[in-house]
Image (cartoon, rainbow, N blue to C red):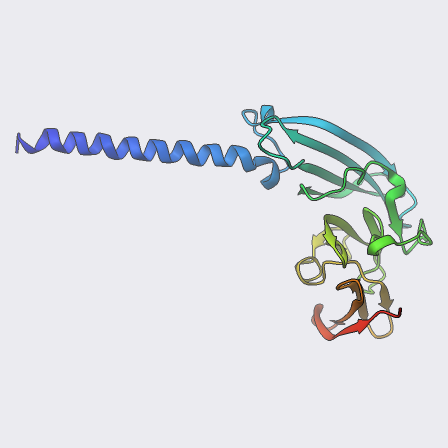
Length: 243
C-alpha cells in the first residue's frame, strides 16, 4: 500500500495539471468570443477591443405605435491577427404616447458594412412611408425596417444581421404581440432571411426576390397559416433576367 501511494499522488497531480491547462485554454477561447456571444462585456475581456465607431439616434417616424432608439458600437480587436470588426446593436422600443420603454433587444455581428447603423435615415418604414420610396440597391431596404410582417395590424421590425450576397442582406425578425412585446421569429430569421419585396395581405404571403447570379433571379413565396401562426414555403422559381 505504501509503495502505491506516491504513484497515486503523482497521477493525481498529472490529472489536475491537465485539467488546469484545459480550463485555461477554454477560458481563453471564451474571452475571444465574448463579444460575439454576448452584448455585455466581462471586465477582464473589455481590454481585448478598441471602440472605433459609435452612433446613438432616435427615430420617431417609423411607426404610429412606437418610437425606436438605437445604440450602435463597432469595435476592432487589439490583436491584429483578427481582421473582423465586431459590432453591437442595441434597439430600444418606446411607446409613442408615454415614451416609456416597451421592449429592447440586441444583435451582435461582424458582418456589417462600414457605414451601417451610422445614420437614422438608413431606416425604412412601410407603415408610415418613411423612406419607403428610397432606391433599393441589391435588395437593401435599410439597416432597420418596420412593417406588418404577419398581417395582424401590429408593426414588426426587421434588422440586418449580415450583409449577405446576391439576394441582399439577411435579417433578424422581431414580431410584436398584442401586449406590445416583441419576440424573435425563428422561421422568418433562419429560413426567409431576406426582406420581402412583395407583401400580399389578402393571401397572407411574403415574396422574396433576389439575384442568384448575373443572369438569373429567384422568387420564393412564403404563406402564413393564420390559425397556427406558422409559415411555410409554397413556391420557388428561378427566372432568367431580361437582357
